[in-house]
Amino acid sequence: MMKSIQKVGIIGIGNVGSYLSHALAIEGFLVQSFGRKTNDAQSPDSEVYLHPDHFDLILLCVNDEAIAEVSSQIEPSNTIIAHVSGATPLSAIAKKHSHRAVFYPLMSLKGHSAIDASTIPFCLEANNETTLDALKKVIDRIGAKWNLVNSEERTHLHLAAVLAHNFSNHLHYKAQEVMNAAGLDFRILLPLLENALKSLQQSSAKDLQTGPAIRNDEATINRHLQLLDDPATIDIYKLLTKSIQDTYDKKL
Image (cartoon, rainbow, N blue to C red; front, top):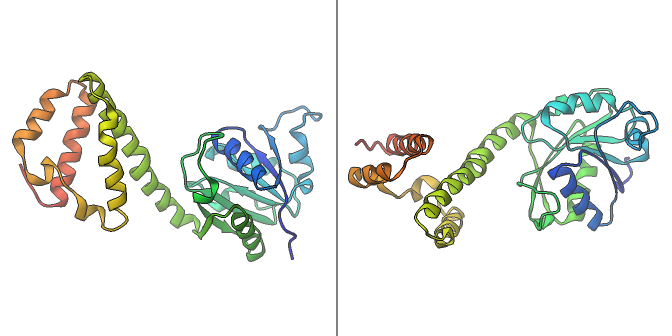
C-alpha cells in the first residue's frame, strides 16, 4: 500500500506550477518547486531528477511537448510522476516510472491567483489503482472534486474547454474593443454574461440561443458588419452567424 502523499516536487515555475505550489502549500503539503533540468550536477534542480524518492509526488507542470523529455530525465523510483496537461495522454510519461498519472486542473490558472482550489474540478488518470487512490486523497484534502477521465476523454474535454472558455474570452476581448471605440464601459455587459452562465445550469446552450442570426435579422446583421473595420472580426462575425443559422436551419 502506497503511503499518503505529503512531499510534493513541482517541475515548472509557470502559471500552473506556481498556482499548484501555492495551493498545495496552503493545505499543509511540503512543496518544492524546480525549473527545467540543467547540465550542472550541483544544481538544486538535480534533486528532483536524481533523487525523486525524496518526494511522494512529482508534478510535471511543463509545456505539453516537454512532458516526455522531462519525465525521461527523472530517475526511476516508486514516486508518483504526474503531468497536469489536458491535451497530453498518460502515455507521454516515461514507462520506466512505476506510478504514472495525470493530475489535470480544469481551470485557467494564473500564478498566485485568487481562485479557491476547492472550486477546481480535477481530472485524474493513473496506470494503477494504488496511484489513483493516492491522488484522490490529495484532492479530498484540498476540498475539491475529482473526476476519473481517461486520455481519450480528456482530449475531448480539453477541446470543449478551449471552445467554451478560450474562444469565448477572445470574443470578450473583441467586444471590449467595440465598446472602447464607442466610449462605452464594458462592465455594462457583465450582467448579461453572468446571466448566460447561470442559465447554462438549467438549460442547454442550443435552447438558449438568441440574437439577430437565429432571428434571421438581415438588417441588424448588415448594420453590425458596417460598424466593424477589422477584417478578422468581420470574418469571425460572418462565420459565427453562418454557424448559428446552419444549426437552426435559418438562411439569409
